Length: 181
Image: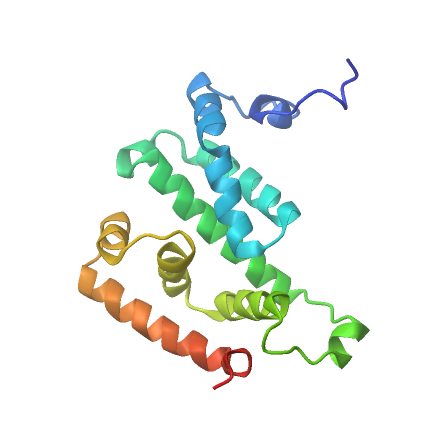
């Protein structure tokens, strides 16, 4: 089988870097959770290539962080939060490096245009404070309720509720033209 056609996994993706040792535990973690990380990133970025980049970033960070990630919180919780933060970083970088196409300049998005709304939401999320963006994604894209978010982040349920409310108000203001109000 040719080298370019074999299925890639975490070991083969990082084989070029001899300084990174891949433990069996990390390989198991990748196999068990790569779908979760990819789906989380894809929901935020709306782009498979960006989601793949996030997947790679999250597991590289996991390698650098080592076993201490397991001691601080559950592996799944850590990976979900890492995926959210890395995906938001991708959105922020995309905004900073944004190239406007001529078609975009002349297009006037309609209220019912789901793609335009998704892009506007991604832009608005990239402008949020990282903590607020993370809480919003956990609540509305990942489907966690306020007590679960409070437990994941180690903050009070009241603070989660306040931040969700304020973030929704801010996003509503940003997305006014798409929401029709």
